[in-house]
Image 1 (cartoon, rainbow, N blue to C red):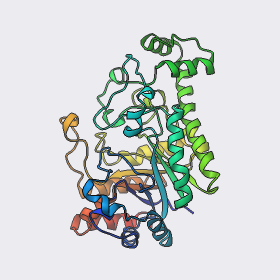
Image 2: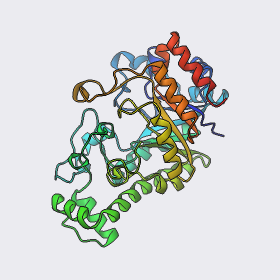
Image 3: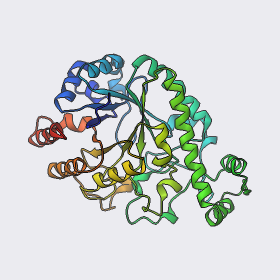
Image 4: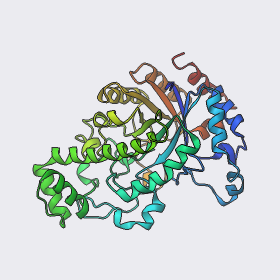
Length: 379
């Protein structure tokens, strides 16, 4: 039975490779922090670098090769901590490099390129879903996780740069490529110039926005449904968690559904947990905002289990992100206010991003204060 109160994202292997912790030691630390579930990458389901460094360096490779994912999963289970195996679906630069024909096209006729670290595929790309299932099915059999956490299960776009002052009309909206437009026309009966992305986008914007939105959202649901069917055939009681965008429907005129095609209302029948990326410092929001967006998503998801993920440290401050007005730190007082806000909200719990942040500070006064607040959450 999932206890959704306090989660921890483990998106790198620093606990094992640099802190030199074993599975039992790491599980003890997590239990001591009041953690009730984790969302973790593994050797079987590795992550590529994103806003944080998830990949293994050459210096860490020898140590990493000795990591026993099943031992870690079992150590957590023996302490009553649920284990969600994380797999990124639409984000996979290595796979994309070998399949550039799958890249989407935006409303300006541009084929997607990298934005900072990000490049993504829509959920209607069958070869990508095939590839992911080829990884996921043996991992579920080997790890027997309590759940699978699906990252980047949406249509492409680096959502972290959609700050409050962004003009939606200038942001890329995918996909107006020939194959996608052809599928849309076949499914809906709406005739479009499939070889002219710009013209098709204008027709859709002028006459068919609801149909386009609904079809894109249905493609996201179909991908999740296919994954769910495949892994429940291996472990019938497994739960699906969705990496969820933190936008209200009124934000950018419903970009969350129209651009990113992630409708929590439509996804609710195929998802057990909505993990909301309520990263307030990244999106230049205040400490009360995570609880507010979590409550809204839980309502839209018809009461499904909803957890708000909180940042442990500030991100997106350098390179293309510099000068965008983001706070340069998240103080402990601010972190605690965020926890307070989630506790007072309708959300079922919280999740902390990331475990490494807490390992780095757990012997400090700030770290102890943060851990004490997590341990007291709804207890």
